Amino acid sequence: MATRIIISGTVDMPPENVAPALEAAKPLIVGALTEEGCLDYDWCPDPLTPGRIRVFERWETEADL
Image (cartoon, rainbow, N blue to C red):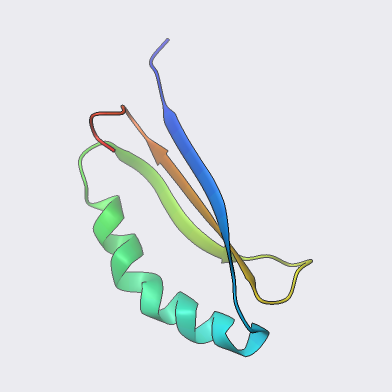
C-alpha cells in the first residue's frame, strides 16, 4: 500500500472575514492542486464554529509535500 500524507488544520478569524479569506485562497488552492503529488487541497468553512476555516491536504508522498 502506498504512503499518503494527510494534513488537517484550522484557521480561526472573525466570522465576517471567512468569505473574503476563502475568495483570496482560491489561487493558493488552485496552485497547490497543480503541484506534483497533490491529491487534495481544500479550505472549507466549519458549519458549527463561526469564523473557523478547516484546511485539508492530501499528498502522494512526503517528498511531494
